[in-house]
Length: 62
Image 1: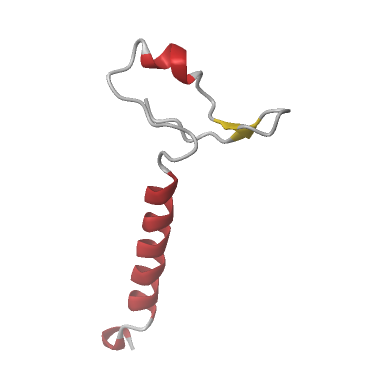
Image 2: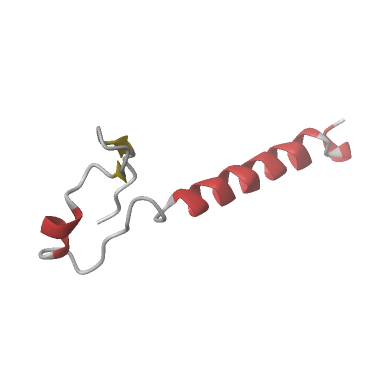
């Protein structure tokens, strides 16, 4: 189970879209919120930005 949702409860606690305790009973693996896929999302955005920059400045295309 990959939970990418981010919600803030009235008490300020950050939770995902999935009820972690319930899903953990059925799923072999589950990502926590917070601390789950966020770092991978940031890494992928940085990678894509770098690739776009390289392609934009590629002298072979000019």
